[in-house]
Image 1 (cartoon, rainbow, N blue to C red):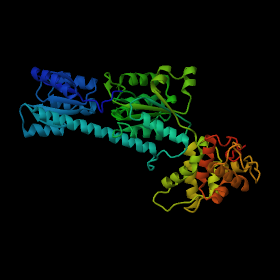
Image 2: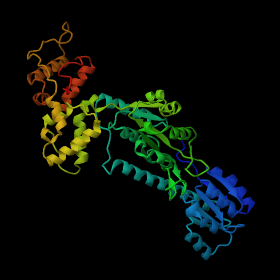
Image 3: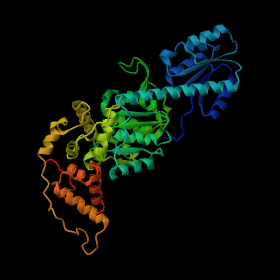
Image 4: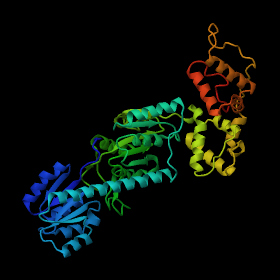
Length: 483
């Protein structure tokens, strides 16, 4: 896509004075606009009915249809076009008639160039505001009215995600976000948008799997009234709503191959065409895609176009599942409590309940965790959350967990590099392992005796594995999992 902040207006200028048409054809493009001209009202109406224009500047007195006659067809033939009327015979009656028919403005000939420029600028601002309002409504529907979520987690996996976002956000390149359902792919897409040069423009999320197959094209690209059965009004597509900003196509693997072709054409040309219209028009949109499916396998199976796959993943960003970043669970739980229990007193979580949550595999990822936290808050009524407030399947997973084998109460004084003297780091590691052995692997009790938080204990164990100081299969490093 082009890097321009926003495309110029597409203008139709209709006047029977040839020299004025020629002047507009030369001067309006210098302001960044695209212009087409014609010399009578009937030709203007035909062009407006067939093509897509942002603005129509119409002389009131023209052969055949007058400018006000053309304007009278606006609701049915060109509802998205703003109309400016020109006249060489100004009168209060004419001005009232123009405004009554829905004209955006009314200028007297010969109008000053600065006046016309100011009117076009106001139209551009109005259209930009309308797009942003539509985008906001789309975002609110997608969020379900919840408080603004954000990326949470201090694990190395999440730090890597944040680093990648910072690197690629300022560009306009295509990004493909990969991850299981519920991992927060939309949050990553939103972060890419908010850290980009398009941050002040719309962010429009689209769940491709939630749109009926026969309506996908209309939802994405819009349609003209009467284009198909049930199209009882003109409608802008979500691609056009995102103009100037970011379009997030979630679950792009759900699109059928016919729509994949049209999406590829848009990505390559920057042009879209509403259903039922003949002429395409340009939009300036950055596209970010996401999927929980393997697009490579879909390409091999012939269900996803290879050229589209290459086009949408200039950068590939992997979002890890929750079971691969368990050390983030305490921070996530605290954040989710703040979201689900806003403006109220702090709700504590019993160490045993937190341990239970950290021992579970979370097949539904952060989305499942959010549901569990909300359920626990309701059951606890704002009192500390305990194990009994958690769903039975979490408790069952814990009761059927593989027991952690006990380590000897006395540890060797040199567990790493026996020929070298012990460092403070070695002493800390051995002390942590002794305390864990004392409590038979129960981390909440060990953390309490160590005088640190449960999250800090997990972080220290995780860091020891990363630094090669402990094997990954150490029984106290591994969180207990259901058999």
